[in-house]
Length: 452
Image (cartoon, rainbow, N blue to C red; front, side, top):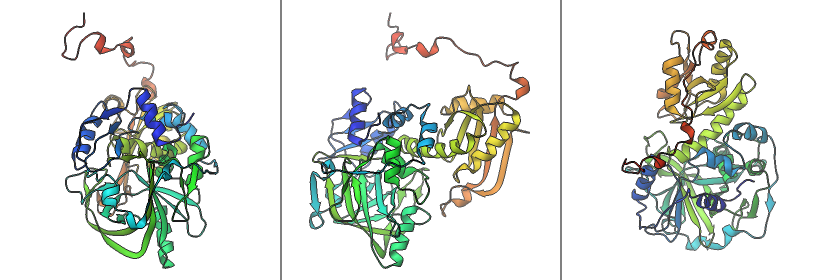
């Protein structure tokens, strides 16, 4: 069964012994994220901070950092998540309106809101302009059709009822805002924090413009998403979320936002972005605040899954896919296939590079290579790639489109790191029987001494 709330996901992780609790006092300015960075270098466990300076709320992070957790949240396994999610994407499951909405246990009206007090003031990078909501999902409806869109957008917490948010076409939310602004109207929005896992995935997805992402979330979790009418805007919001900030994006108003440290480990500098004014803040009585480090393991695992699905949909008709990985970043992918011919690899390379605009690098490997293990992939490149015939270069083709860095992301390269068919029966990869059963703690203690 799928896990249909952020809180239930944390409970599931805790029951497995995976959730790391931090009881000591932690500053939300850099210290919290520094602990997170250390954890992401290994063992990469989810974290729950129980004593964050300046807020009574607990703060959870690194929750979806592992592929196994992401798959389990949908009732799937890492081996089945790609084909199953690709199959479910075209389905819809209408949402269900409920009366019991934990997310509205506490209601803060507009005149009492202070986002500098009511929301944990987590500051991530050294030069960040201040505290940001980094795990907030914006919900909005197409002003023309009423279709719901969900998207991740960084939000700078200014103070009082005021925030700044980056949104622009071709993003669907940006198109909604542009249409509302053309009519001199504010755009009603709801910022959802601690959302159901399936809604997080829907917000990161590349589904068609006219698809309803609340219904898609229901299809992915295998049951209708529970929603409740928002208090002050004409929107449905997830009943089981941790927090919702309701309000409007103002038309014809821009303010300076940034800098902010983004997912490629550089900064988006100061720019004039939209203003979001809150009309209500609702939350659980003991709400847990979710934050995500841009470019950290949780961010890349979440976004990487949606990119992998796009590649899977395009490549599956051409080859038997073992798995698809995005080790290290999400501007490329590794496709592991059951190779049938050398020509087949060429077709996979060409198709994977065009499956999503961000696919700047593609590596195709044999099924015995783990596409999530960067060392294993590099081994295949070193040992199995023939550079004079195994490279495919598409010069001048854009990938990541952001204006300030677009010149760094021109051209695409694919690498054939599979064993040539003529050598397949002559070179065996060595194996080490029993390695998967070995637990080092049974042999040596944490100081390297024998346990005998």
